[in-house]
Length: 257
Image (cartoon, rainbow, N blue to C red; front, side):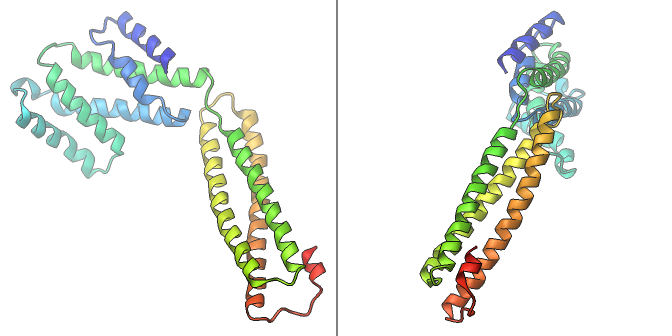
């Protein structure tokens, strides 16, 4: 963010901007968790800026700056985006652009041109710097949560085997059912981390090898999810048998294995 802000400021100055701070402002707002998020936010900021300027440029010089005109312009400028159900980021950028253009255009004729140019500069620099300098990669975090889930799932299998081999006490069975519920929450977190990792590799030119790793981890996750489904179903069945004292006359050791 620091490097992109400095670069965008200098580029804006080189292009004779009277408001070069608009470029690093766009950088600061555009840098997000992943390259894809940054690109989307930068695009929304550009679209919101253009729409906001288009909504105000033809009438602002005929209005004075006060609470009534500001409120009226914001209402007029945001009616169509709200009706079209545009992304809220675009709506916020439209409102911000309308407010600042309306205020500053009465003080300088350069603001509109500077805002368009510097917004585009900041957005492009933010994306390029984000791609080049240590692009975000969350594959390791996804693998770490997956490994921990695998370990915890294995421990649950061991506990279940011990429980089955020791007469399936109902109270202990209830505790194991609680463990499966907690493990389900852990599984949901693993899936969130995988989605985050997948998004972090989009638009990432250095993520080809990581994509292959992520695909292998997804196969591992697929098998672990089947394992979770199996153990949760088996535990529920055995717990029902234990509660009604109707355990089948089978060798517990075979089930434990």
